[in-house]
Amino acid sequence: MYVISWIIFIGLCTEAGGIIINAIISLYRNPDSASYINLSDLYKHDVGYFLVESLFMSIVAVMRACLFYLIIKLLQDEKLNLSNPFNHETGSFIFKASSLALGIGLFSFWGVKNTAWLMNQGIKMPDIQYLRLGGADVWLFMGVTLYIIAQIFKRGIEIQEENELTV
Image 1 (cartoon, helix red, strand yellow):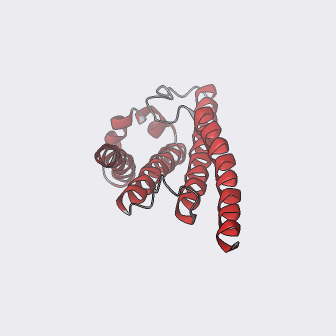
Image 2 (cartoon, helix red, strand yellow):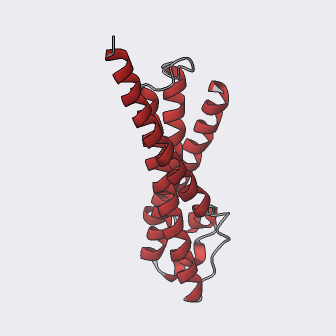
């Protein structure tokens, strides 16, 4: 799992970096590089709209990379203890992962709504999946589910600490 998490993390960092660098190059150097993510029509229509769409894509990509960084950190520090799963490190990891998943879901949802609005304005836009903004509902569901699990872990940690204090 550790090696696979690293591979996915590197891919997500590359994707996030590509989006950010491409947006910066498109803004300051070469407007034709907006065709990298097929947003050249949006760039030609309005640079501000291009910047907002790139910002949504960047935030989602960076948050996904952060989520896998948390997974790598948990596996690397070997704080995942299956014999004693109710510990503060695991509870903290689940809460952070739920927050990131909710954030990814919200920004994906806003990015999809922004893209739909731009398409209603008559701007040719690529597919949501191509922009890496799809799946907001899945991320929101995952975030809520992880939040519930984090609350269960929180209560489990409290019970375990009470049992350790009882003689």
